[in-house]
Length: 308
Image 1 (tube, helix red, strand yellow):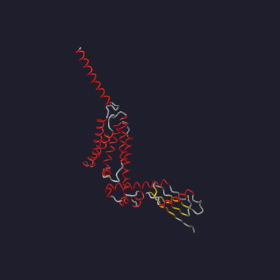
Image 2: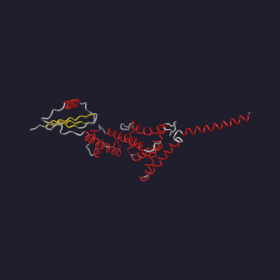
Image 3: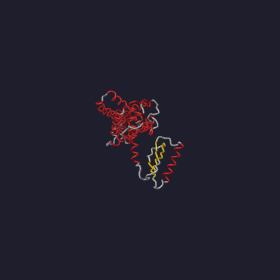
Image 4: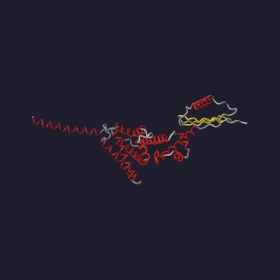
């Protein structure tokens, strides 16, 4: 009669690790030194209580099968874990928007993600950690999309790209109004689950790079102050999005975005732009001053001749 031994270690690791099934067969080659060392190492760590983070690793040894007969595909396992994590984050975001952070229940998030509640805690230690993950996913996604929008604009000029960024940002504010309001409410309340400054900086840095590039190319005034321009851009679009969201029905929301964007572009062109995109505004000012000096010099010469 063949014997079967199943030995399982459930240990919390600091990083996600693929589940490994190690099958130890009678008559097969002994387990490699590396495998034996790994098992001994995990055993010691479990007994001493050192493995205490949020990711789980299972080692299962089955006597009766060859070690090489059931290899686990790491990519398949990783893809499954990533899909499950996305499902958790999507469900969590919907529940947080509907009920707020305090009113949200992990059990409801698990139900919508179609998993057990305990599975969520294998990914995130607490509801607060889950909220932080949702916020990070959202703002990181906005940054990547905004950069993609900039890269997709065929025209290379500042104002064309500013228009594209304004369109993107305004639409995001309107479509995701509930979640963005929740995000900033948590931040105003100094909550432990508020979005970090780093994530906000990464997002607004898309505008910063665009503006500085415009100055380097001579499309914008050299004396323009970056942080003031940034506040005008994001602040104006935020208030415009609230006006559109509160006062207009669904049919008019999309229609009213274009005029807001064009007004923003016109404002930047008139206040920050140069005449010809190559320092022309400054050159024009110098030319006007030079002309006035020439006329003043002519008058002085005429007056000197009369006096002489």
